[in-house]
Image 1 (cartoon, rainbow, N blue to C red):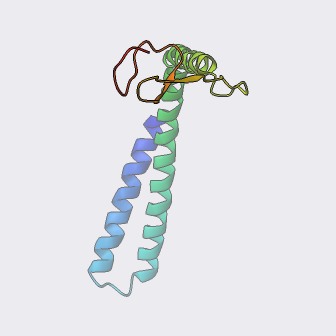
Image 2 (image 1 turned 45 degrees about the horizontal axis):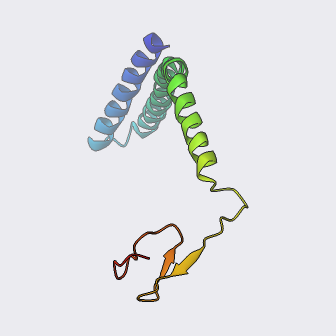
Image 3 (image 1 turned 180 degrees about the vertical axis):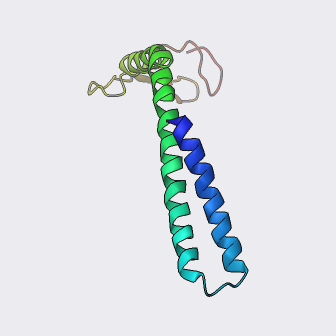
Length: 122
């Protein structure tokens, strides 16, 4: 497809340039021919881009499918495991128990040995 697409693309560009040059020359008598040349150049340009694009997309998609799949699989598994371990989507609530520091009355977690506000032993 590239062998056909690139020449069609080049011919389309040449036809567009020729039509612009003729238009800039101010030739009113050849306006109909100039419009046909412009339209034909535009159509060939679009077809050329399409053929070149299609010839590039398939090898790239095949490469990404074969080379990228293992990495995507590992990454998605890691993300899933991380979300599962974090209990982000869990409905269970962890009960938090606080105790008051006997010195400053600050609410501290029950497993703390020292108060985080006054620093004294609880």
